[in-house]
Length: 220
Image (cartoon, rainbow, N blue to C red; front, side, top):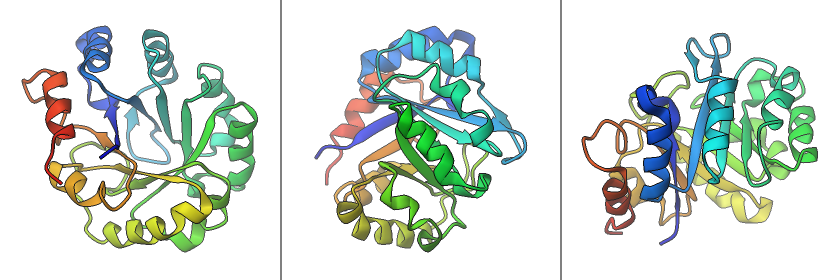
């Protein structure tokens, strides 16, 4: 069964970020998930433009840039300038007055457009944007901090999105509290990828390659 695994780099060891990127790449990670937080849209600061630019320079793997910032339309070009074809930028629709304008800037730059949906955001409120994005990042915890508890009602939202994905041509990604049980349940249903943080990947005193291999060999 094919599904993508993304490393949540806000959980990485910043004492040696170069080694973290190298070890994750060698271990077989599919992409690097970059959480940008401005302390306004979410009550936390995490990662920066410079962190993202360094990781982009240190790997040829794709970057998934998750902008948890107010009015991303004002700053999205700063991030676009460091990215390549095949990279992704997610915005939160609630963070912008006219989110489709921001998404069009991403599309025009040749970057893959995506939206992130908070636990409290309904599928119905983003229906029109589902027609233009290529990826939907489903937040299964409230955004802003790692290590939070999974919110079970989000599963019903994923079921709705799975029913729409083929007709509207988008992929679905899981972000937050991702344990092996969630991958075993949702990968067969059609979720295309999973962001891995402290629940499965980081801080385990185990080589990343072994961890990623164990995940790919889960019994479905």
